[in-house]
Image (cartoon, rainbow, N blue to C red):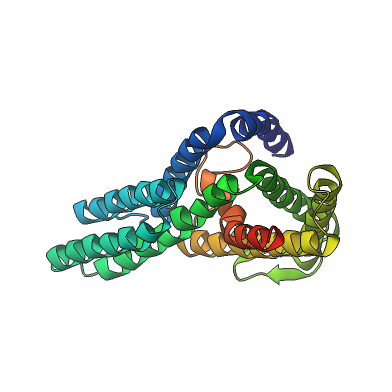
Length: 270
């Protein structure tokens, strides 16, 4: 497992670095669109486990269309259109529920999961696009990615070797308080490196706020996804990333961290 995790990381990081710094905004926008749709597919696999009806297929299709529409609006800086996209999605979901309810009385629950999925994945992921498109966005985005990854690594190894006290056993029995603390240590160390290397004009207090917000919310995001997987009896959201599970497993922390990172970056640059 350790070897697979490191091999996947060694292969993925250079590709991501090239897209971030040499691919430009369009390449990054396409990457986020693809990852968001793959993660949304994995999310639907969790919440719709065992339900492959035509109505659920329509809910999924509306979710994918809404995801791409939200990301396209954000990429083009048409932020005012995002609520309209979500309203249309809700209307489509309502039509599916009303027309198919007599055949499947569980559809209102499925509809709620679909709407949550559109908020959870593409809407939160859109803040990565906003961060990339902001001033010095490449450096800030790379900082966020490294900070979150460092927190994941710190939590994994601190928890493996020092973990004694359970953090949230009902959701994730293996996560420990020591692991969570190790994750924050990893966040802070990565943030300090970026402060000294690429973001030297940023104050230490501001960088600490950015890093800790991303780290804490990242851990909440990890536990949030774990709650869905545990309720469905699923260990990993997918198998596309050896050693890491699925795309949603890989970006669950990043999704919660991204909005806070974007707004803090805007505050720092004021």
